[in-house]
Amino acid sequence: MKKMSMAEMLSAAEKNNCAIAAINASNLETISAVLAAASHCSAPVILQFSPLQHAAEDISYREVTQLAELISLRYEHGAYVVHQDHGESFEDCLNALEGGFTSIMYDGAALSYEENIANSARVRAVGKDFFLESELGVLGAECSEQTGELDDTAYTRPELVKEFVERTGCDSLAVSIGNAHGIYKREPKLRLDILDEIHAVCPVPLVLHGASGIPYDHIRLAISKGIRKINFFTQLDTAFMSAFRTEADKGAYMMFAQGAGFKAMTEKCEELIQLCTGGKIKC
Ligand code: 13P
Image (cartoon, rainbow, N blue to C red; front, side, top):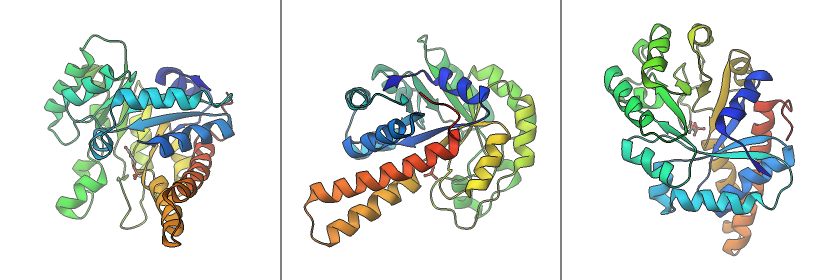
């Protein structure tokens, strides 16, 4: 299985009018599930790892890079890149770069517009050669804690996009168009009208976070309107955990419960990889 850069992957997605699935993983079973699925589909996948996962599992960026490299040797087909998800500080981002990640996200969405730009630009100026994802707008989950609703200020404002990308120097842009992390409290309604406006002015590929729970036909529509990277976590976590629990509840040894989790997550990853690429990129 080959390594690909994020730039190569997203430009292949652009050329083929499809997207690349970006899936969070943080241990042997989940990293194996993501890479096995990409190999079974002969497709590219983005393997993501966040500071939250780093803290929860006490596994370093370097170890994730090495584990992915090692597991990828099992497979002939497919391609992957390791990407940092939601670096919330300059130090988070440096940690990922020092751990061999070639693609990172600086997430300053909770800050003011100017602070978000200043911090993204500071990360950009580190001087290494890497791919930078930044975020403009506030995702639904963060917003609903305050108001229970997405208000207008939470959506990415299309009129700010060009300036934001120019001043941050980011290589891709995560947008807020009605998407939220975690389990949706009601069926999400993506604001595809806002996505159209963003796409018309944005010079870099667009990223959709919080894709678990968004109906597949909405995801396909979002892809047709320029989304090129799609982030999934909760759906895979649920697939793994419910298979794991079923085995554990039967009194199975840990290895069998983990094996069942791995299998269920691999199958769900395959479904999502196919949903995003539509079989258009073979590697
Ligand atoms: P979900 O957990 O909602 O799929 O979101 C994942 C995500 O956006 C990671 O950045």
